[in-house]
Image (cartoon, rainbow, N blue to C red):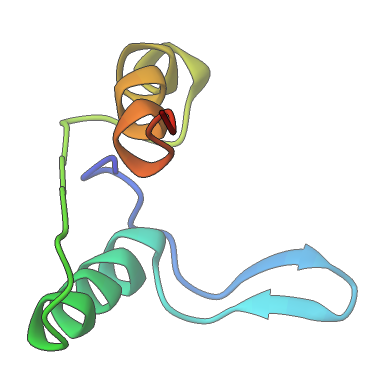
Length: 70
């Protein structure tokens, strides 16, 4: 998650309004999962919502979230 994803009240489509910023929403979701006893791996980088950062972190995140079954 990029620490620069701070935009609020973002209209994605005519009928879809994202009121809270991406970073605040993800931090809140992380905290709820931890409080619920879930194993959470959270990484925050200095940057925004862009492919260059995703390219670095998404493969490891997917391997963690979707481990191979024996």
